Every structure is written in C-alpha cells, then in structure tokens.
Image (cartoon, rainbow over all chains, first blue to last red; front, top):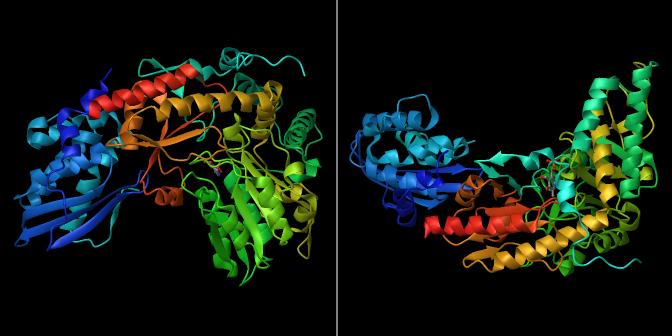
Length: 150
Length: 414
Ligand SMILES: Cc1ncc(COP(=O)(O)O)c(C=O)c1O
C-alpha cells in the first residue's frame, strides 16, 4: 500500500503553488508548446542559450495538474546552466525512474527530481510528469512542431 | 395510486447493488465507490449470465442456419430487438437498428441520411454542449457536402438558449442534432420542443440519447424525433453494442451504410437487391451476444422501472448538489434547472486530475478531463472538470465519501 501523500509530497505541492521560473522569457532564443490532449495540460517552454551547447535561462508558463506544473518547475531549476548532453542524460535517467519499475531507484543521480519518484506507481500520471521534459527535448533537438503526449 | 412511499425509502438500493458483482470489490483497500457511470455503467449479474448462456449453450450465427442453435440464437437476437422497441416505444421492430454504439449511430445517420441529401447552403444545427461524437460526424458531412454547421449557444447555467435556436432555424435547416442529456453538464434539454420547432421548418431531428437512456424513460413516439441513438454500455449492457432508432419511412429511403452479408436479398454482379429493414443496416455478423445481453439489461432496468430509477437518482443528485455547494472553493459547472445524473465541478487550486488521483486512493472513481466536450470547457474557460456521475445503485453514503475525499484533497493542497 502506498500513501497518496507520497505522491503529493510537500515539495510538489509547493512547486505547484509557487512554480519557479514561471513566466515568459522575452526575448527567448527558443520557444515551444507542449500539450496533453487527454487532460488539457498545456505549457510553453522558453529557452535562452549560451552558444549552441549550454542552457543559460529557462522559463515556462501554461496550466496543468500539480504533477505537471511541479515537474516543469523542478525541471527548469535543474537544467538551468546545464549543457545539452547533460540535460538529455538527466531526462533519460528521470524517464527510466518513472517508467521502469524494475530499474534501481538511483535517486542520487536525479537530485531534487527524486520527489517525483512516486509517480511511477501511477502509470496514468507519468505523462503529466514528463510533458515538460518531452517539450524540452524537442526544443533542444530543434523541432518546431508543438509536442503532444498522444 | 397507492400510498406514496416515504421519500426514497421504497427503493431497495442494497438489493440492486447485490446484483452488481464489481460493486463488492475494493480499490486501494477501500470499498469501490463507482461514480463514473456516464463513461460506462457497471453490469448486473443478469447481463453477464445472459452472455455466458449464449456462449455456453447456443452460440451460433443468426439468420442463416437451419440448425437448432442458429434458430435459438436468431430468436434471442430478434427478441432483444423487440425488447428495445418496447423500451423506447418505437412503432415497429424494423425501426431498431443495432450498431456499435451512439458514435456509430450518429455517423450512420450523417452519412446515410445526409450525404446524398445535403448540399451547399444547407444547414445542420448542433449545440455548444454536444459530445464530440455529435459534432465531428456533422463536420465531416459538412466537408463532404458544403453544408454548414450552426451552434446553439448555452447560458451560464448550461441551458440551451432557445431564442437563439429559434433564430438559427430556417428554410435551410436540414438536420438538428442535439443531446437529450449532456454528459459534461447534466442538463436535460427540452427535446420535445426542440423537435417540434425543427419539424416546423421541415428539418429532421436526431437525439443523442447516450446519457438519457440510463436515467429516464424513453418514448420516441411522444418525442416525435426522427432518429434516436444510444449505447448499450451506459445502460448496464455490454460495450460494443448500441441502438439507432429511426422512423421507418426515413430508414426505408436511406441507402445502406455498410455493404456485406445479411444486408442483401440477392447479389449479382449486375445488381444487388438490399434487404428489408432493419437488416439493410446490419451488414455482416453482428455482435450477437451483445444484442442479447443488451436485451437482458433492458429487462433488468425495466423490472426496476425507469420512473423509479429517475425519482431515486433525482433525489440522490439533489443530495449531492446540496453537499457539493457547501464545500468552500467548489464551483459547479452545469447548474441547469433540469438536470440528471451528473455533478461536474472545479475546485480552487486543485486540478481535476489531482483530485481524481487522490479520490482513487480512497476507492472513489470519478472522471477528470474534458469529457469529450471541449467546446463546453472553452465556454466555461476551464481546461477540465471533475465529474461524478450517478447510477441507481449509488447511495448517499457514497456521496458522503466523495465529499470527504474532496476535503482530504483540500487538506493536501492547502
Ligand atoms: C452524450 C454522449 N454522446 C455520445 C457518446 C458516445 O458514446 P459511445 O462512445 O458509446 O459511442 C457519449 C459517451 O461518452 C455521450 O456521453
């Protein structure tokens, strides 16, 4: 039995209520929308780059459930200042953490994102937690098409 | 009349609950509280046993065998059609077409009735509160024919703007397609009046009865609608089976929707002679068990009585509405004067999805999302709502648990 409070930890509730880096970056080097047509979650991600390789600034806005807003907020804190390969590596680890329950819970490697580990017990909510990351990945890969979880 | 029973006491809900095996299960170690009936209803033992009997005892194809099993299956299949005819008070069993569900029924009418008849300048009227399955088939038809789609707006309570409807109606109106009861708002629409007004300008009327069939007694003769669509799975029957009712003269004049076996009288490469109603619209081997199972579902609710079901549910919805409006920060979406079965709402600071997950932990199943009615969400400027939808097996205790679950969510978030 897991407790629903393991999912809605205080950190998540706090990031949902006061999302970090919330708001449009203007100007922004890159902008992309991501949405989840199933639940109507919609966010826009803004990036400023330091050269081609390093994320200097990141912001987002939009609306969604607590999991998607908190995840986006935590993501922006996490990837700011990181190189593109570093950011992608974190996403891979984070994604495995959420989707592969047989994988060892290597919480160290994802730092503060570990508060979202509870999402793995809720398969229908994984898309909420990963929407922002999929959007970031598409943005870094230079795709101009809005990202959809479906 | 016999002496009226005191307030709800005459409805033996516990006895009915015992017929639904799934209601005894636990979810996350809590008794299941199933409040997602508008998505699909649970099935009584009587329906499951009917399906089981068919497969165990007389599984065979219909309308084509001389052997005993086929005769039994054909008889059961056609008996179900008659049950449905009686259930909705259609004039003839030939007016009952079995389809996969409401969605297929509406597509059938759009294509088979509309495709050859409509053209540029013609108008189809729907409403702002329709389910996507009563919007998209008409949009497809518009693309194919050049007809245009017009939309009756709703007011803040979630009621159709009947004056706007009267203004939309005109000589060019060919089809009016309206939900009998809204799945997103619970509004019961004045479908008799809507139909009469449409007929006055020579338009045909399709009513989407997906949400009405489980909650209210149906009388297509009194409604005088031209087409009526509903799904078996929301009426305590199997998924994958539904009904299109159509007035015989209209169905006779419509071309088949699908071609294949069973829908023909004779096939040659020169000319194929279509079968009579209703078979003209039932190409291929149908979902035989589903039809027979739907017949059992109709028997089941008819034995309880649709009027009794409606009275009980109205009382339950009143109770739930009173409790919900007492929750600080809760806003009902859909407050029509005439409602059935559905409590749609949003909570300050708590997304419906999060509420859904938290309630699930207490065994409470609700729906969170746009309910396949994105225009309604847009109208109320919300991305999603939480929706509790009731059936006659739900109880006041379950409503109390829902409210307690909402309070718990508020504790987590505030
Ligand atoms: C009002 C309404 N119309 C149509 C449908 C579509 O029914 P089905 O998916 O069974 O075809 C639904 C079901 O969600 C509904 O609630």
